[in-house]
Image (cartoon, rainbow, N blue to C red; front, side, top):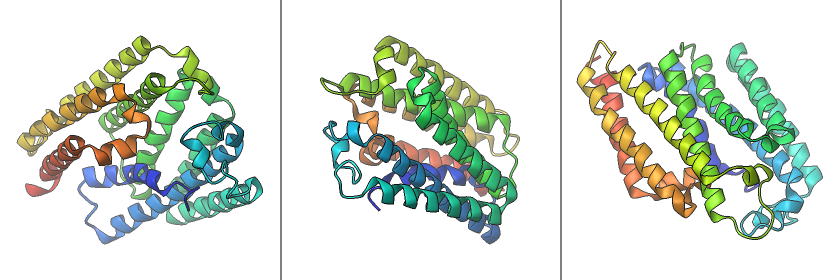
Length: 279
């Protein structure tokens, strides 16, 4: 279970974004499909983590934190890890196809993307950022496909730009923190200035797109416009925290920082208020 990294399953909650935004998550059938998509993504992402741990086990043993991972620490053999990864991938694709054929296609696309990232994109500057961000977009797409909800261009733009923001923040934190010893190959080719510009560009696109979307809502405009403030403040707070290296594990940073939690709760309240209260 530790090798499957259950803490990172929180990323898969993105599958709930589309049905929540559409205001249909309270329908039992839709909720069931969304929960099913969540578990599918958990299986697929865990399969990817296991394969990566086998591939990186020698390098992980030299890392102060990663050396405690079960494969690197010798608690789980590479052969067993790969068998489990294969089983999770096959069961995940089968379960996704049972929910919706489109979800099965997204599941296959997710495995292709993460597999190609492990083999190639992780060593290519910029492409590694886009590949990881693409994984977040596919998670959100999985929720829409599973529940038969059309995703607007605003939804895709905001999701994609926020994903690039979080991934660039992770790289920036790694660059600030790393000392002597092995580091990610592409990290040597990034600069703090370049990553700051990437963060600024991604945050700007996300903010402009979300604001534009909020002001085009025909109903419950006040709720959506008010939700702009916590959204932008969340991006600003997250950017302020990355200099200390805290953003290397985004899911842990979000759950640990009270200000981020409060802003997340405030945005969720206002957004869902716009979706449900006056509906």
